[in-house]
Length: 483
Length: 106
Image (cartoon, rainbow over all chains, first blue to last red; front, top):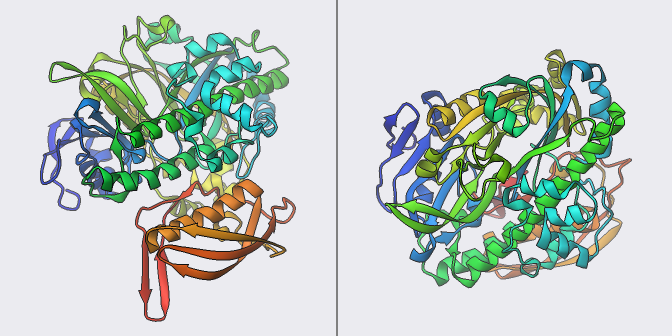
């Protein structure tokens, strides 16, 4: 029990917090016993309980196995609110880094043939893709007008500018553009922060990773996704940078006033919200969508820069290297989606904060080439262990509104990790494991050390066992660039 | 806060900026003040080291802050602060001094 919060076991991977007090629905935590212990330790369950108070919430307030404490919503939190029943949208259920997400590229480059050039590849990525605190973009400072095009068009803008291909859009969640975006919903401040950060990685837990497909669990789906055992992959993890943070910040001020205006009872100020259909709710979604588009443009540009780096390092064109976008997912977002609730189709506002969409075969939003197998679910681990590609399932729609975990989740605070890392050479430890690493800050390495994160294998095993997403391949990191 | 962004870095107070912040409570004022300083850093690439508040009340403050433009040869950037959050926010008077707590998203 955590702070007196009762948790009942439903099955080996499902735990329920019964509805009590002001909760409108029960809480549901997808976890095994060991991961649940760490979820309980960091006060995350209280946040699951708090989210259950939101107006219009249906079914459950959920937490994924990588859940940990966040602002308002836990990171790894999922909640759907019924729009027609006054359901709310809460910026805390999206996070400061709107559309922080992951993009995965497959190649036909065999790792064994390229491993002697891994230093060269990592160095080329490090010099080609701007990263680190205060980094400015590969694209020179945009005019206000051009930035608005980025916010409106997202990845489509990047393609028009010559980055990547039209065919990449199909393999991006929302095709890299949320149509609800309205650049005019952003403050001047947010626009100013966004003008020179397109194509930048950022710092903290953002990274570029070269991996090798180490283990194949489902050969048929791996083939459909274009993932071959022993082949090199490139993963980009980044978000909407300063622009996104500012949009979240600006919205919290508006939402705090909205809570009073609409007489909403919330147990935590960071859960400030407004009904989806209110002017405040619509304005937030319009701004959030614009910030999401910015993040997609960002990852699209970085993908093109990464391809350029590979070409430089390996002396062959991306085409000859078989570079292909597998998929791009967001894991901090709110979406208006149709889901069945108590046998009835409902329009829900699904908040995924540190959670990834996991849609099944046949769903209209799954790209055509993947429709018969389901949506790729990208789950980055930490730089020491590995990442997974999984596939969405029908059961995810029933259990979690089509949502799965997003990564390994932090186990240790950054300051504790830095203390633990004192006197250690994290990069040398990783090199001994065969991982070439280049980081702009040594401190980032300590903060992001493998022990600072939960066990990604355990996290994905829970999702697989609960049939929320099914494992397709495991990717081992061999090169990492960090800000 | 600037000690988190550039720990131990020498920031000369050569340029000044006037700052005005409005709020509805002391707690909100505190967060808005920090955000204003973060915005100056991000938009002008200006690190700050001197903060002189001329008027302050729960409804707002006016201040003059001083610092210099980021210089990569002298300032080692350590941490990106995404935002000052409302979580765990406290502003309290204890005798003659004021104590405040804020959680930064980094």
